Structures are given as C-alpha cells and as structure tokens.
Length: 295
Image 1 (spheres, one colour):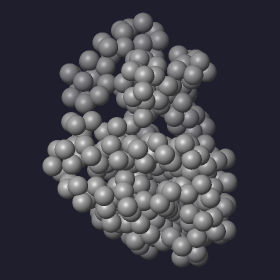
Image 2 (spheres, one colour):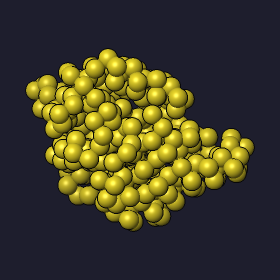
Image 3 (cartoon, one colour):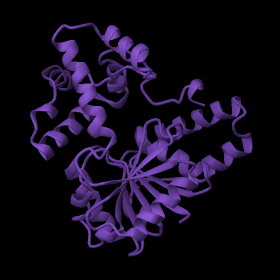
C-alpha cells in the first residue's frame, strides 16, 4: 500500500497526511473546502520547516514530503485508485456513514477503508459498506507527528488479514499499533474522557480553579498537560461528543457530560480552536502547529 487518501483536512487529517507523506506515501488529501486544504498545507509546511530547523530532517525531505501530497475537493477523484482510505472527518456518526457509503461506491474493491474515529463503532461504520472485512479503525493521537500510538480497532466483521496489514502499515509510519476490540470509546477515550469530565465537575462544584486542577495532575500525577488544558486542545465539542457515545453505548450515568461542559459547547467556547475554553488563546494561533518541544 503506497497510495493513500485522507478524508478531512482538519487537525487530525493534516497530521495524518503529514505522517504518511513523510514516509514516502502518495497522499490524496480531500476536503469539501479549498480554504481548509490551504490551511492544512500551510500547517504541514510550517511543521516540516520546524523539523528542518531542528535538524531532524533535511530541506530535501521537506520538499519531498510536500511533493507527496495532492489536494482534492472531489471525493470520487481523490479515492478512485488508492490502496487505503483514512477518514478523519468530524466526530459525527451521520457524516461518517455518508462518507463510507460514498467510499463503497468509488474505491476499488480491495481498498481498505479506515476511520480515525475516537469513539464511534467501527461495526456500525462498516454497515454502510459491502466490505465489512476491509473496514477498520485507525485511531491516531493528537498531535499526529509526535504521538506514537495508533489504536487499531477491529469491527465485528474486520478480517485478520486487514488487521495484520494495518498493523504492519502503522509500524512503517514509525508508530506503535495496539489492537483493541470495538466497544464504545475503545481504550484511550473510555479511560481519558471520564477523567476529563471529572476534572470539569471538580471545577463546576468549586473544589478548585482551572490552573489549580491542572497543576495537581501535572505535578502530582506527572501528566504532561492538565486535563482541562487537554480538553481545550482536543476541543470541548469533541469531548462532549465522545462522552455522549459512551453514555449511549453503556447507559451508565458516570459517562454523562458535566453541565458546565454542555453550556460551554452551547456558547461556542470550544477551546484552542475558537480561542477560548478553560483558557484563552492568542489570536491567529488556533491551528495546530507542533511546538519545538514536540520535535
């Protein structure tokens, strides 16, 4: 597999495209918005030049990586001859089902269809296709160029062959694949999101302030980022969506999102991407740029 399509040019999509392109894959990056595609290329370019400045890659590597990426606004054209599709659209089940219905029609039969979903059932997504054996979860962590983990999620119908191919592919990207089964939230978010939600409840109930809560977790538990700062980084709307999936999937009140989180999402205070969440952020720095410490 050397030709890949990435659907969605947001934070996760451009990071996934970056990693594939840097490992000599031909990448078709697809989004409905030309503006999103332009921003994605700008972000990838900035991150690569930071790596050049740190002498992690050469200028030729930077040029080759950017040359490996072609952008599309037409999904049919983007996926017609690829070996793998990685869907990285918004964490909305209806959006994902529509994309996979289209992928079923416009990709070659042997193409593997992967989703970067952080919580939605791979089995449900596979139901939008006629090839559940070739549908799998490939959950990268944010920021993709830095984080080593890829959760490889087997749906009910995912074949062993597909799982083995995606596991091997993840290793080609210098990632560490971990195979998990298809239950709400998988492993990462089943554990992470209740912790973030509890941190929000701790703030909501007046136990401590934002910086105090994050300081306790950073200094006491050696977390590199406090849970409230991490929630801002992920996006508060994304956190709420994942908690909703967990609550629906398990029917357990412990997964119900905190009223404070609900109100912040309704108010449009979604974290880093909107400039305000539990913290405020400098204007013009909302897109993900991997910091020097990451590289």
